[in-house]
Length: 72
Image 1 (tube, rainbow, N blue to C red):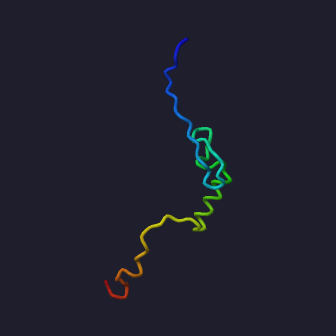
Image 2: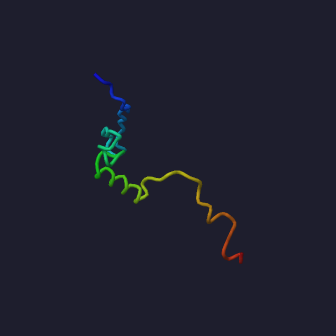
Image 3: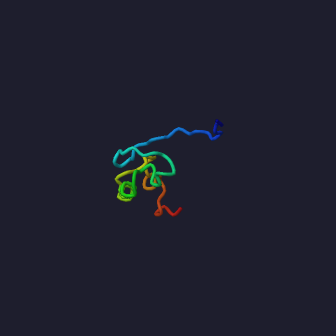
């Protein structure tokens, strides 16, 4: 009997961000980290409607002391 020299990689399972279904992280899950196209589109819609956002520094464009009226 011969041993295989193929390295075994552990199976990683993540939860779908939309419905919390367990998803195998691999080629068999083309929509990863989502479980399906539907959950992927729900998430995209939430970003498009600005229900989700990445926190950052506040917008300083109106309060940075620069004004078009000042002639700069």
